[in-house]
Image (tube, rainbow, N blue to C red; front, top):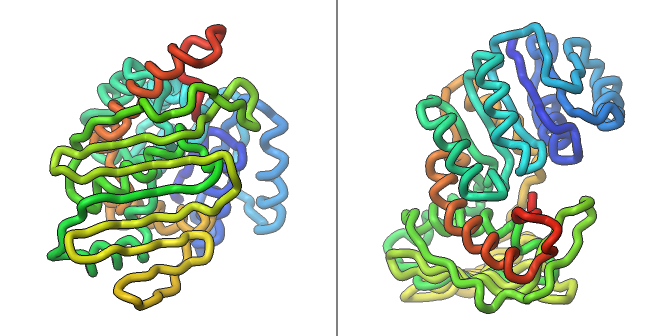
Length: 315
């Protein structure tokens, strides 16, 4: 029996749950431990449980389960709750594998606490999955031997603050570099309320300069244009449209599919359980990538954000 604990039963937690149950053949071999402080969050899960005839499951509003050995914990709660959740889980259970959602934390202090709490854990991972997708493996392969000079990501209202880490992570993996600086001087001064109460995001431009002289340019505009990615090398340029699933390179078009989370989690969990490894980002590397971003966004928030909210309100 494999014990899977999902903490945070909102939409992202539900997608992870769907990804697992859609990928396993013998559902009787899995026990699902589902946690959320809000009882209403369980309703959507209950529909999936009934649909797939899942019999082995427990709900809890306070992470209080009798099963003390957990094969995989998936943390999908809000970023400002992550450290306390990790601390409580680590104290109460023997956990073989962690999968943690981005953003890891709202402050560098909390980020460092998470890193320290799990520094010696053999299997802790962060869900920034583009580096695990087939299309980006293909891109890395065809660009082998070329030097990436710049990567440009632009689109309308795509959640720059909370989603920047996805492209920082992807670029880091493509160019094999964990060190960079960030400029926020081209960010807008007005932070925008999101659908989640007391959470914000922002438009404008983030410029990230990696140590090996690769520049990542992230632009979120006040329109509804789809997200596009351009990779500039010393010999050519490559264009990626995730919305249409088209890659243009040297006048050739390749069709691809960006998988939904509900199509990916099953493979991630299976790799962890069966092979003790994963293609997503290790916690140590992700903390290194998060740290400059969280620091700079906090500085910008303190200067231009809502003074009633102390720490960076993104998740």
